[in-house]
Each structure stands twice: as structure tokens, then as C-alpha cells.
Length: 324
Image (cartoon, rainbow, N blue to C red; front, side, top):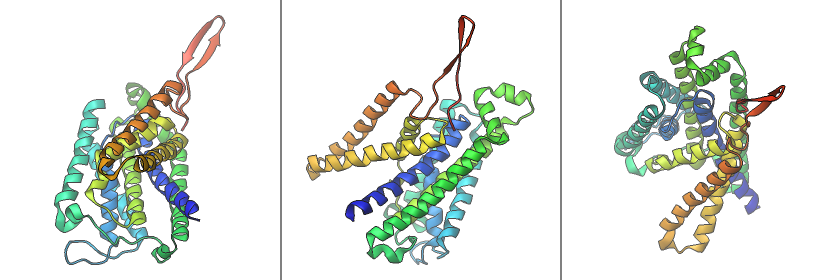
């Protein structure tokens, strides 16, 4: 039973990462927006939902005691608005400049969470966040299975919605802007308008994942949203295949399995005073796996390879779009 309970806990965490990766895939894989500040949007969602749903606390602001569903919806709205404002201000930038700006946004959010103690609890974070079916917490197996079902349903709904959007006219415009912006603009499409939309929807999905994680764990703190989170999610997308929603989910599960497995292994092999070295080995394990996959599958597990179309004696290579 303990093994089943841990499996449910593992899959719940992996699916929450999948939700973040799906949001990043919309921004980068579909639209080509280089966002390295995703940890900030996850934090916005987590803190928004926590402030809306926790009981009243005289020590800090917030604590409205609203239902969890309201907290998650509020997280999506605030996260989407924050992403839209960020996108409106920065999407004139390209590649590395956009990356630097979004990273700066994530740092600002993390510093606000760390120093605005009357609102966020500061370095002590926010505890006693309501958990779905919290009454089942005394039965860990049932509690973990119930939370797994909830997160699975939300992730599946997000996956199906993003699949529909990717194959809709809206999604085709995003792909056109990613591949050849001048051609898309010449057809009357507003590059900035569509990019802001994609950035906002991706940010809302990341914020929803942050809210789900907060309610699943029951506690959040600024240290949960450091740059290592951004590194993990980017590796998940690259391993699964940029541009593929199925790859985003598969890459998240695979990378999280290696991360959790290497963490369990190093905790056994290393003494407590050597845990810092053990944590470094986790990153090494992810780096080695990333190198191997990029050598074997340069486009990721679910990324399509370029296909060859032969015209007589000549072969023309046509770069196939990544499966979405």
C-alpha cells in the first residue's frame, strides 16, 4: 500500500510539472517566446490561491477563506494578467533580450514574496493552505489517490484544450509567426496581439499549476520558486520535444522520475552532512540524460524529424513541424 501511495504522490507531482510544461510549450514550442521567468508565474498562482483560500490570519493580509475552486480561478486570472502585462511591455524584444527580461520578472516576484512579510509571510511562507479532501489526510493512500484524480482531470482538460487551440486558426497563426513573422504580418496578422495572447494563456496555465501545487502540499515559501524550477521545466520540454503537448507531458514524467530517483539514491549513498554534494549530483544526472537524449533524438522524444521528399533524382529536405 505504501508503494501505491508513493506512486500516486509521484504522479501527482509529475502532472503538476506537466501543466507548467504545457504552458511553456504554448509560449515557446508553438509561438517561439523565450520565457525563462516561468517560476515567477507559478509563484503568482500559488500565492494568489493561498491568499484567497486560507483562513483569516491577523499576522498578515489576505486569508479570505474562499473555496479552493475560487482560489484556482483567481490564480489563473491574476497569472494571466501578469503575463499579459509582461508580454505587452517586453514582446518587442527578441530571443536573449526577452529571456533576460522575463528572468528579471521572476526575480522581482521572488523578492516580493521574500520581503512582503505582511502579505506573503516572508521567508516563513504561508501554511495551513486548504487541501482538497483534507479530511482524508489521515489515510495517506486514499488522500494521494484522490488528489491524483483531481490533478489528472485538470491536466487532461488543459491538454485537450491546448491540442484544440494548436489545430485551430489561432494556433496556425502562432505557428506562422514563429516560422516567418514577416509573411504572417503581410497577411494582416498582428504579431504583438497574438504573442501577448499566447503569453497570457501560458502564464495562466503556469499559475494554475502553482495553485494546484500549493493546495496539494499545503504550504508554500519563496524557496519553492527559485531558478532551479525554470531549469527543470525547460529540460522537461526539451526532452519531451518542443512543440508537442504529448512530449511536454512525457518529458515531465521522465525527468521527474530521474530527479526523484537520483535524489532517493543519493540520500542513501551520502551522509546527511554531504547532502549538498548529493543535490549537485541530481543536476549532473539530469544534464547527462539531456545530453544522451539530444544525441539520440535531437528534437526530443516526440519531436518530428525532418522528412525527405524526392523529386526525381534530387531530394529536398522539408523541416516538419513538431507534433503538437
